[in-house]
Image (cartoon, rainbow, N blue to C red):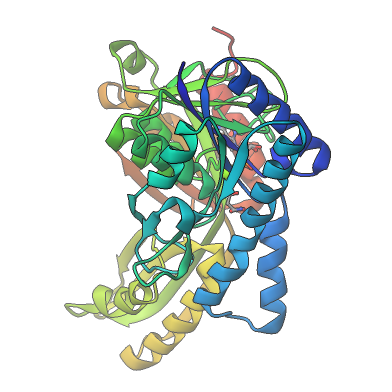
Length: 406
Ligand code: ADP
Ligand code: ASP
Ligand code: MG
């Protein structure tokens, strides 16, 4: 008997037929003699619709209330799943985040999990019940509902798996596993049998939404082996595991893109100590995460400062930057939402040279202009015009020999 955590994403529970399909899979796992904890997302599209509805009322809806609103998506699916399983004759019970004891900080819409009580969950398992947990949500010390950021059900699953010391954490989604590039835009992408936590962390942070970044951080910290696989077939998926010696032999293991980026530049800023902090502190005070930052010095004691934020934070970041620009007498603020970030990732980069040169040459050959560059030990990212995203992904996938079958 094993203790198995299964997470099903939005597409997998997208309508009643799919909920029935998933219920069948859960029942099968339970019938094989396992204890099963299931984490569910909202039906696909529901979270987006809830956000759009609130934005029809006001451009910046109150974040605490957004948590209350968004959490309803997962509340619906867990109830429907428990109803389905009970109608099939199984002992099943739904639990919302606060009922499980998922304690988070109070950062509305992007809360971090601090602790998971799980006593009630364990008691239900001991009573032979299947437990269906609402993903994406928790509650803070005051008892307020919080949500974990988009894609947060992955994190709920890995965190619950760590808290109850599960034998397996299976993330069921609409693709067969983690691929060398997004299979929906690169037909030649190949499924990886294994990927190490470090590479998966980079992929997740660079836009491969197949796993939310915090779920990978949790998995790495608590050594939870994660199995990413499809809810539509029985194929083995991708195991996310610790790095082994063979993995460094592959220089680049994947190409990732992220269209959810926007660029803001403050032009002709007086070049004096503290100016970067003056510009970026109000942005971080507003809870906005800044990605790439580049400062270019001009002649005449002037400088330009460029940074990128996610598209969702773009309007708020522009508003803050325009206010700061006035205060520090910068000449102008320009913004650009039509950009994308393309990255090549691989632990093999630590021991191989020439990756950046090859990436730049590949993009040049396709006449794609590079707007910004950033690197880490195991990845290189370029900001390009959004319209070239697919072309860039495919060209890099071919250039780094990922099209080949092993
Ligand atoms: P779920 O609703 O199950 O959480 P998501 O839409 O969040 O699913 O994540 C799955 C999607 O991630 C896939 O449909 C795919 O388009 C996208 N994706 C992006 N990059 C990759 C990749 N390298 N491998 C697999 N999927 C990827
Ligand atoms: N429903 C949430 C979202 O769409 C969480 C998730 O699906 O993981 O972001
Ligand atoms: Mg997801």
